[in-house]
Image 1 (cartoon, helix red, strand yellow):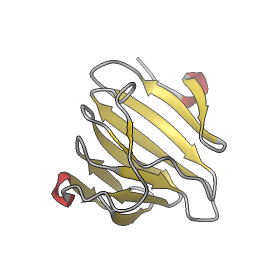
Image 2 (cartoon, rainbow, N blue to C red):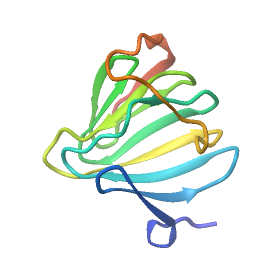
Image 3 (cartoon, rainbow, N blue to C red):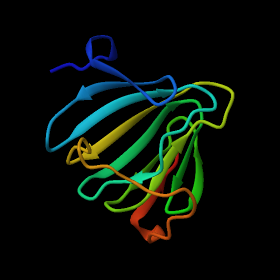
Length: 129
């Protein structure tokens, strides 16, 4: 099956951010997201899902277990189960990225207080172009 953003299920989250479900399912989900400049998601973790964030365009600031990483186009980072993280757009251009979750992260989200989370930083990995 061919997946395309134009025909995908769309939803709005946060302060004007967008998500398109390219592949939904219990075992795996793939979502394209758009974050305008100055937006952020709540810091949170997933007990059952591992995630991989992959930047398509722009710069994504990804805080993982208290460490801040700036990912640009063709760079990605894995976030393990139970690791607090937060995606932010601190730049002046939109950022588009994929969030791949296995199993799906729907219904598996726990908000985490602001500030360093203290989780093991060894539970995330960085891939660069």
